[in-house]
Image 1 (cartoon, one colour):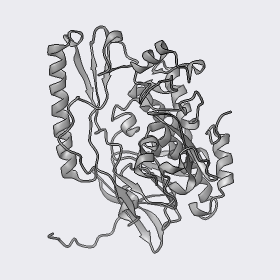
Image 2 (cartoon, helix red, strand yellow):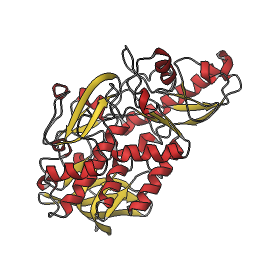
Image 3 (cartoon, one colour):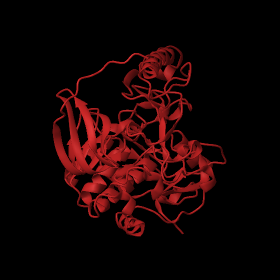
Image 4 (cartoon, rainbow, N blue to C red):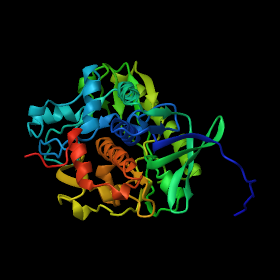
Length: 419
């Protein structure tokens, strides 16, 4: 490998804050809102021009799931609040509470067509939510603004800046140049673990099959279409999850720009081939049009931090004393994970927290914790913990977990199995 020597530089400090959240996906936005609502001066920095990540720009517009598969809600808090806000504007669809856990075949079939039921049968109705991505983004924007989050878009995180054993802040690159933001506590919600990786925190890395979800409008007979597409909250519009039926040629490393470039080009080509095929061969799509291809590749796994505790498949259905979130599994009925606070913590940096799909879990558990409701739950926990840490010298390691759990429950989070 050939290297170049760059000249030393002085990087201007753009801002100083108590809590810095890097990444404005569902986890990062939840973390920032929670930190701000708990009294911390909070900045949220996102590399794109909008909040929501895969929940909006990725068109993964399904909350899978807020229940345990047996009719009990296990994710509440900010995820429920967003659902309520979107539903109040007529832009969300989900089963009413009295149907959760039902095995009525007609009900299961109805929600299956909306993408709210997945996995191996026998099936039951799940508390899952279909929604409009612009309305979801609008809700996140409003919650950030109302809570006092200082939002900065179009700034790409470069690396964590450390002073000895303490993380002092993060450097960013933007159209205006390079700058730094200093913080007492940093939350890595980048999805790919960009910050903890830059600091040398150990991690595991998985290669994945990339997808691009897309929507088509002007579709007739939406109610009778098969399982290849899903109904949406917009009349005459359907969602194609995971893009075209033909997968990309190989798995990719989602931290490698060359692999990402390949995936972008191949996935978009396959979507257009699928659109042409639908218009040609399926009568309901004869006069249909392409509404939108996801802005972001549907990549849900890359780096996973090896933190103070790695949650494993063997922990399924095992209560953990330091649980700060619960999650079911979108393809399994009755599977439940208590996500421990230790899975959000780096052993090396006491003022670093991680939220979302790059928390410390194994590959099998990741299939549950990567989903939007679980990401919002770990984000809310990380933000609340960061605010508590600020009051105690900035150490997330020193946060009293019982106090954190009490505060989360007061905010509507669910940490106990409903009886």
